[in-house]
Structures are given as C-alpha cells and as structure tokens.
Length: 144
Image 1 (cartoon, rainbow, N blue to C red):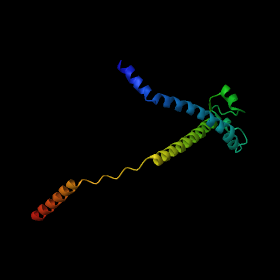
Image 2 (tube, one colour):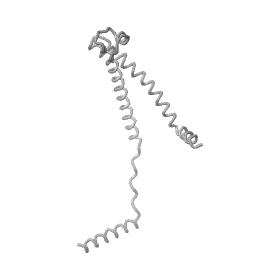
Image 3 (tube, rainbow, N blue to C red):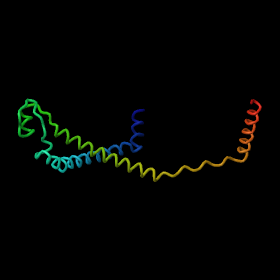
Image 4 (cartoon, helix red, strand yellow):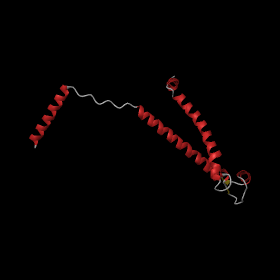
C-alpha cells in the first residue's frame, strides 16, 4: 500500500503531467531541429564540398564509393558527415535550451519580491543589547 500511496502523491503534485508535457515538446522540438539541420544547414555546409554534407564518409576497405548507401552495402564505413549533422543538431538544441532557461531565470527574478527589511527589535531588546555591549567593554578594559 505504501508504494501506491506514494505514486498517488507523486501524480497529484503535477510532476507526471509536467514530465509528459516536457517529453512531448522535446520530441516535437527534436523534429524541428532535425529538419533545420538536414534541410537548411546541411545543404549550405555541403556547398563547401559540392556534395551532400550528410553523405561524407570514409570506407574502411579503402575503395571509393559514390554514396554512403552504396558503401554501406559493401564495406564498413565511418559516416563522419552523419555524425557532424547530429553534432550540429545537438548544439542547436543545447543553445535553444540555454536561451530558454536563461529567459525563465530572468522571468523568475523579475517576479520575485525583494525580501522585507528585518523588523527593528523592540526597545527592551535594544536596551539589553546596549547593556551587554557595555559590560563586554568594561570586562575587556579590566582584563587589559
């Protein structure tokens, strides 16, 4: 019964819903980022080599192949173009997440109310503090 009760409390706090929303948005954002990299950045970067950037590879048998798909059928390949595409994808997602967290932190800071100034102590506490300080001074002078 303890585990079921803990799960009910966890689900009731809204953590499950927040997590589900995050996963769904993350999946959709991943598709957008993949399209951005493959359909926009990759062709632009591919102009450097006059061919498809995601098609950069090195066949481990040392032979030359026209396409990555052709090479994969015959020999093991190091598809560094695909890796670079995924790396660009990751950097874009990481940068956007950084901007999102930065924006959320700024929003949170702007909504926080400044802490109230500490209340002034009552008169009797002030008097007792002064008496304590004077006694400390007198005992320090006698000890010297």
